[in-house]
Image 1 (tube, one colour):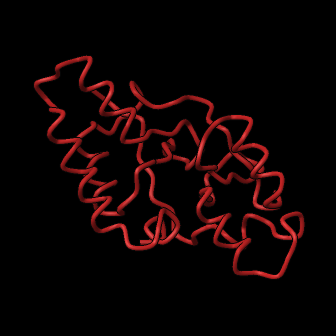
Image 2: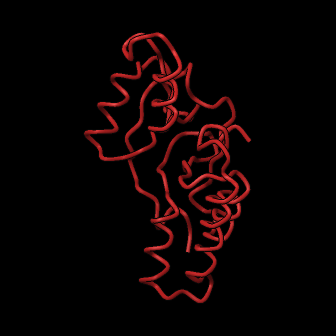
Image 3: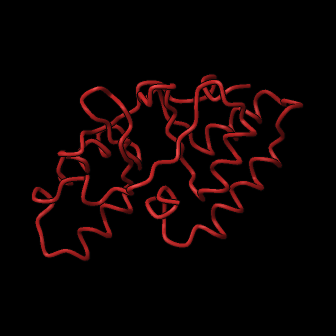
Length: 157
């Protein structure tokens, strides 16, 4: 099974200039906890989480409308490809200590996003021999025990 089979297609996203107030509104309206940041060509240039936003707002003496997401997002991006198998995706997530992984094409254009939950739910339903629920749970344990600072720091890894 491939990432393209389980990813959420057309995920919510924002531009680097989007301010934190607008980003929070997108997160609220789309019921998600992470926003891929894309440029004018829809290429992934960053990622920002609800936690990144909370930390930024709690540590800066600025209004949410004054802070662009580019100032809060991790500099380095971790992403998968639609043709990556789920084992590879889990390995990327474990190494980067992230629970959500943007999915991009060869040009870096955002195609979707996948979470550990997406993989776990799909694996449970499929009873796949190629990937067990235990594989997913092992990755989740690694992410949670070694995360040390959230998605943004891990995305920078």
